[in-house]
Structure formats: C-alpha cells, structure tokens
Image 1 (cartoon, helix red, strand yellow):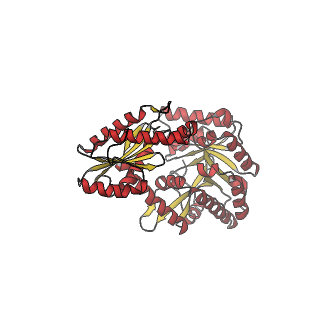
Image 2 (image 1 turned 120 degrees about the vertical axis):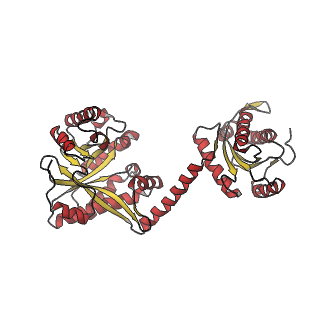
Image 3 (image 1 turned 60 degrees about the vertical axis):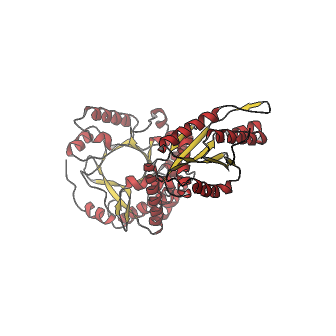
Length: 428
C-alpha cells in the first residue's frame, strides 16, 4: 500500500519547506500542527530488530497518512516522530477529533513478514494563530504538549495549555533572573529568632534566604526557592548560605554577643549530594563555627526516598557534632520506626498545627500527639509559626522547649538582629 500523493515525505530537513509550500496552497488563517511520537518504538527495535522497527515506522506512516484528509500533510521527522499540518475547518475540536482518530489507527497491530507488533503514540497539538503565527512557535508549543502526553503514560494526546505556556515563560524568566542574582550577589540572609520557652530569651536563629531584585524589589521565597530547586542553583546557593550564616553567627560571638545556634534548611537537591557532610565540614572549618551550634533542617520525605543514604549522611553529620532536625514534622510521610534508628536531635512542629491552638480540637490533639512522641523519643521540640501569647503558653505548658514566630520577631537582617538581642522580648 502506498501513501496518497505528496502525503508522506521522508526527509525531516524538508519540513520547513513543506510548511511554506503548504501555507501557500492553503492560505487559511487557522491550522493545526501535530507532533506524533510512537511510544514503544525503542522497545520494538530491541526485541524485533532495527530493520523490523524501520518497516513498522514506514507502515504506520502510510496508515497515518491515509487517516488524514487530502488537504493535510504528514512528514517523518526522525526519532520515531511524525509532524502533521492540519487544516482547521472546525476549530480546535476538529484537531482533537483528528488526533483521536490517529491514536485509534496507530493502536492497530502491524503485520510484517509474518510477524505482528503493536504500539501506541503520544500526540502534542498546537494551533495557529492561538499558539503562535510561525512554525518555530508552533513546534515549540506542540513539543510542550507532547511531553505532557508522554508523562501521562502515552496513548494520549494533549493540546498546548496556554496557561502552562505562560507559566513556562515566567519560569524561564525567573530562572534567568536568579542566575543573574547569584552572579551579582543579590541574595542575603535574614534571621528569625528562636526563643527558649522557659526563659523567653533568644537562644538561636533560623537562617532564611532573601532576594531583593534591583528592578522589582523584594521577591517571595515561596516563588523563587522552588525555582532554585528545579534549576539546581539551590546547591551552590545553599552552600553559600551555610557559610554566610555560620560566619555571621561566629562574628556575633567574637563581638561578645550571646552564642546563638543557627538552623539552616537543607533542600532535597543538597541532601541528595553524596558529599553533603564533607561540604558542611569544610564550611565549619572555614568559618570556625562550633558544629554543635549548627542545626540542619530536613523534611521527612527526604528520609523516606533513600533511607540508606539518608542514614549514612545523618550519621556523618552527627559524628562531627552537627544536629539534624526534622522540619514540618507531621506533614510528610512519617516513618516512626525508621526515625528511631537515626541520630536526629529534634523536630519542628509545623505552623499549620500551631495556628489552630489552643481552641481548635484537631490541632490541639495532633500537637499533643507530636509532643508526646518527641518526648518518648527524647527529641528536642521547636514550634514554629507562634503568633499569639495563648499559643506560646499552650506549647510551653505541654513541654515544648523552643518557640519561633511573629510573636517574638519576624526574620531580620543581621544588624536588626543585633539590636533585638540588646532588648528584652515581650513576656507571655
């Protein structure tokens, strides 16, 4: 069986020329672009051989070509992927119907030389002018949709999500700004005091990353920290933050201020680094900061992902005297039996539980349970997000040793923290 005239071409470098000719033949303002990738073609190649796989791709190309209309065009782009140009006579609904039809055609078994194989496909769809008015834009957006279809397990099509496209654009813009901020030293560290629940005196701080964009002003950590994690930039910035916080706390001690501990968050990317303990050791050596005054905060989920590596890392940190705390305790996938086997120093009660104290029954019961568990395991307890005197009294009365929140102070630059250390905190 042969394809319809000029329906299927085989040279991917002709796609741009094909698009130009086709647009001249069909000068309609609305058309669609499809990227069609075979899902199991690599597996077929391994099991049936390269020659069979090539024949199967050719056979499916003919089949897809016959499923399209005379005014549409199809080309094999390489890497088990076809590109199709489709006239939109009925808007995007027409494009969706064509995609569904193609998926059905591709599912049908392929018989070649007495052998039978079957596969499915993932299809990414974009349309002109809604998703762009040139070939490069349409290809890029169809590729984004194709990736989403593949992540959904294949045998599926996806229209380009314009809101996703806008989010991707913002993400790329944010990533570029973050790299510039790192190169131009725009990041700073702020410190939120941690208070001894018995004496109401500041005994430590949590170091928090801050970013002041020169053009846009202060940026929200909830927006830029996930982007740092995604880009991998969190690793060098996290290392810089550890050195900065340790060095500045050491400077306070040399100036005759109280010897404060400092808590630094460790991101999943940092925790997965095989040499995290060595990096921490190098930072402490450089800053001469006492290891017993450093607290590293990790989440429960980071323990569950790779328990053996997590155990080795925490053991190495504990051996050098660094204390590891479990942040946001109770909000992740807790594994109490495993937690007992780790040299963890303490836990932090998440502010989502603290906010309902002392009147919300559910928050009260959960908090009491967490406190009881920590006490039985002989772990120190820090409650974060403390905003009212009632919350502080409840937590202190039930055995929480350390409190942190806006009741005492927001996160402050180093200079303002020094001023705060010279003043008495409000009692509760």
